[in-house]
Amino acid sequence: MIEAQNLTKVFGATRAVDGVSFQVQPGEIYGFLGPNGAGKTTTIRLLTGTLFPTSGQVQILNMDMVSQEIRIKQEIGVVPDEPRLYENLKGSEYIDFVTDIYRLRKQEILPEVKELCDAFAIDFLDKAIGEYSHGMKQKLMLLSVLMRKPKALFLDEPTVGLDARSARILKMLLEKYAAGGAPIFMTTHIMEIAEKMCHRIAIINKGKLVAEGTMEELRKASGEQNATLEDIFLQVTGTGGDIEELVKEL
Ligand SMILES: Nc1ncnc2c1ncn2[C@@H]1O[C@H](COP(=O)(O)OP(=O)(O)O)[C@@H](O)[C@H]1O
Ligand SMILES: [Mg+2]
Image (cartoon, rainbow, N blue to C red; front, top):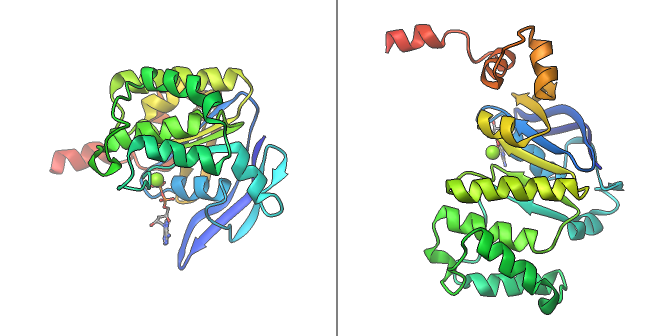
């Protein structure tokens, strides 16, 4: 349902994404974990047609990104890490704008909009977006995406900026969407989020996939039955080695 085949993106001398392949099944929440600069945002941009790959293929909902880009974009929902919103618009005007470009019927989505506003405590739609905090923009973005009931969801660091209650509600909503059959691809650099929210986790480091599986599979592969995701992460990204030494010297 979401498929990357040998996906590669080169920026100058940087191989931001380097031969990455994976599949996300219908109903699965797939967590894409990695250190800063590992290639998470680049991967999500390739998957959602915002960037063209240097090589490799993307298939979403059994459609090919090259030949069916527009149809894919009509069906999917994308929550980017830095929502780029029109600062001069009010939240409500942005919602109307999205309603128009996706040709939705305002009356039909109204109940969904109301429920999402209640769930995320969105009571600021009559304010200009320029006055919003990061968390408020994130919530507006979630509202504008989820109200469309997309058939596949892509979220880049979705919980950054959200308060605890909203993060909990997002988690429950994603589980509901997944239970309805949508594949969900989510990046995060926070272990706890990956562990709590995702059915399967992939770890990317320097553009390459270095681990993939359920928590149980990851533990098995690490050779440590009691390993935490953090232990596994530090092991496979090779970033854990001399932490204690380093701290001693500081
Ligand atoms: N538009 C771009 N031009 C040049 N380099 C880029 C661009 N976007 C990302 N990169 C580089 O690609 C690598 C991966 O970045 P990114 O995908 O944003 O990582 P992450 O989201 O995992 O933190 C980094 O080295 C970053 O500097
Ligand atoms: Mg990123």
